[in-house]
Length: 99
Picture 1 (cartoon, helix red, strand yellow):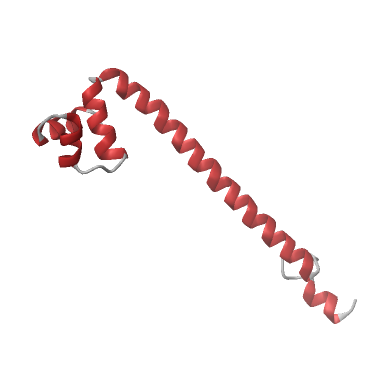
Picture 2 (spheres, helix red, strand yellow):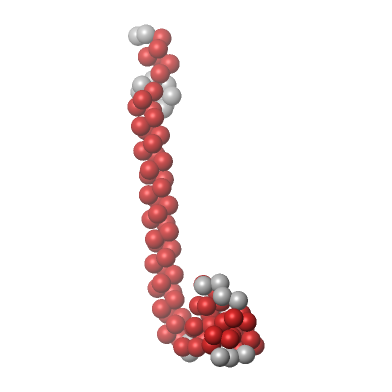
């Protein structure tokens, strides 16, 4: 066995040439990216399921205030203005919808 082959083959923990190690590393990166995408999609689906349950249990305006301030990031004062209610009512609505 040549010295080049000996050193080239130990990079991935098995006997591969450097090009093969590069392909292995690229595949591992793709697998990690795919797993990350799967996790994000899973978390989104769990959120949708939970949100439907909460939405069914609270008043429509309460849900809207919660969604605007917690999910969409709208300022409480702006949400109150858009909903036509007082700032205090938005705080109450946020406390009624579990976060």
